[in-house]
Amino acid sequence: MTQDQWNSGGGYTNGAEGGMAQPNPPAPEAVLEQLSAEVNDAAFFPVDTRGVYYFAYDVYMDQGHISRYVKGLIPIKPVYMPHHRLSFPHYHPPEETGLPSLQRTNDPADRVWGLLYDAKPTLGDEGIRDFKPFERHLRVPGRYHRSSVHVLDRAERRYSAFTYVLSLDDGKQSPPSENYLQRWVESARERRLPDEWVAYLEMLRRGSGSGSGS
Image (cartoon, rainbow, N blue to C red):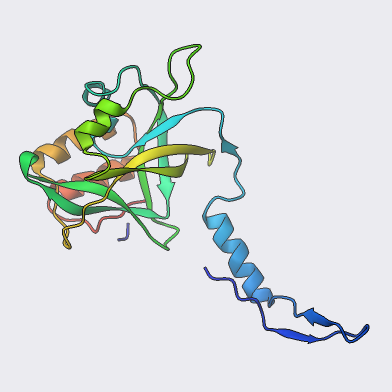
C-alpha cells in the first residue's frame, strides 16, 4: 500500500520533396510513454455505458445507510478506482470525524475499492433515481461535488459511474472517528471487498495508514 506528457520529438525539417517542411516523428520513448499512460488509465478496456451507476467508497456502501436518502438502489459488485488513494481533507464537527475523499496519484498500484450501485430508475422511467435528498445531506455543491469516474471490477471490466468527492480542504488530514471506521469496515466486509482492502481499513482503525490501498 502506498500514499503525461507528450514529447513531440522536435520541430520541423526540410522535406525531400519540394522543400516542404515535414514534422519529425515522435521519439520511440515518447510513444511508449504515451501508450503506457493510456493503458494505466484503462483506456483500452471496454466501457459499460448501458447502465447508470453510483460508486460508493465510504460508509454509503451500507445499503441500509444510503437508503435513508436514495430509495431502490441495487448493489452490483465490488469495484475499484485506479490511480487514486484515500484522503481525509476535512473534519466534520457534527459527526466528530474526518471525512474520506479521493485523491489522484501517478502510482498504478494505488486504487480505492468500493461498491457499484445500479442507479437506474424503475422500469420505463429515464434518467437516474432521485439523489436530491442525498445531495442535500452531503451539502452538494458546498461540501461535496459530484464527479464522473471510471471504475473496474475484478475482471478488469470498466464502468462509467459517478461519485461524490469533497470540495472542502482544511489544509491538513483529519483521521476518521472510531465509529465511522467501524461502520466502514463492517460494510466493506458485508460487500465482500478484497481482504487486503478490509485489512487496510482495519489498519486505519488502529490509527495508522498512509491513505492508499491496493
